[in-house]
Image (cartoon, rainbow over all chains, first blue to last red; front, side, top):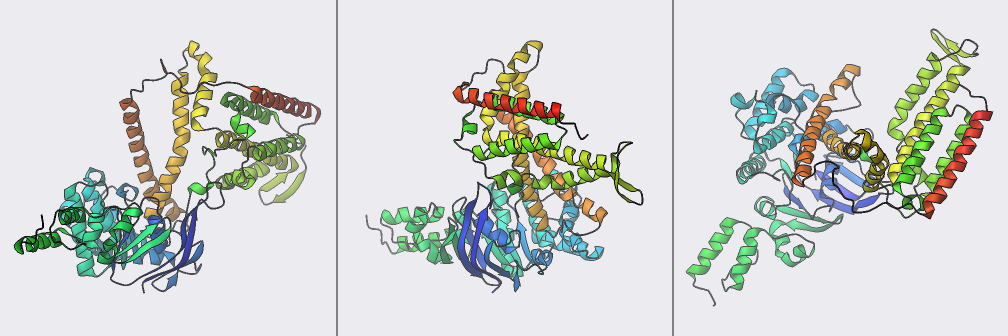
Length: 288
Length: 275
């Protein structure tokens, strides 16, 4: 078990008149090599939960054990832990600060006091992992990059720390379709080739259905569902009840089913949908 | 980790108390009067009275005392530093030496100066905090604007001035929230803000303040666009959604504050100042 959360509770602005409980006695486990989609309506507490995984929040109640270390333990090396658990924020503007792309990506490894040669090697590797060409982009001004490129630089900056777990907090938000596809491709590749555990927070059910193997649904600070992607989306009604939408493709197939096509109830991506529709047409099982 | 938790200046705590119901102009004038009195307060006796009075206001406004004090927490290092400076650097020819070591000499005059100056800053902060905690940003704007409007005749752009001030106040909290996120983003890449020597620590400011400033400018530009998109063109011809009314509560509050001011003036006149 890589991440083990037991009985975690958290209040925002604790001890002030604005105190608000955002996590209620929450427990979960995440295993090595998993691709977990973390979803929930806005203000459900998913970001707060995820920020407990790399000790940006220390548990107020309950415990969080990551790679065998208790984050509430005062003696635990939290800096080292944060290298092992990379966290990419939604807004890359909060992270990027150096004048050039290369310097910004090198920031993490430099904090680890690694030799220059190793740092350069890490930067090269991280840039190739996110599909940025080292020689042409290395010296570029960060603030002259496009949104999608900035997002990739931000991911590279975290990858350069060599994390074993990567948390991506709504990293496709506000990107154009092409930038979004590029980022998703990068994430898919990281999981498939580097076997990094990925925790993917997103508001897009399409992305979650397409990428995640397991889904954890957080609703009002509690875990509403936790299971294989297909199993979770099978409970479409209950998902809608807590204010989540179904993947677009499922809305379409559901509609087609109502029109008489014989299609399965849960369809997670375009490919599945096309196959199902094709076989339904071949069998001629269309009831009018 | 939460930076915004300790910020009380510029925060509005909604409520229905006597203080909340006052006309913003009453509150602004009262705060102004209290601040003016503070500048003449030079004795512990007067500060004791001030402490009682502010505590009474805080309690009657329904602000938890702990929360009001929390806002002082981020200021604590500055206050302590100020006190130390006054203690060792201020002295009068006839002062008694209470402590002396190497080149450092503390006198009783320095001690009183340190105490009283620190108290003054502390209370200046308290008075403004109470004002913003009990007054929403909209009524604060309306109140200030109404108070400054006579100065328009001598060419003072009252509305614009107040708008600028209120936006600045608003940005305190917005920037603190952004700072929170930026600090986290850099901590996630292994920055240990509490480690290293002075130069190393100073260097760690850049990864935080550069994004903060860039974002602040961006935000300001967006705000300008948003205001212009809704045809904001300064104070000329602007009307108010809520008009201000002074009522009986304001009269009562005015009475209380005048009695208090008279008492303080009496103490100031009758007790010999310590500095």
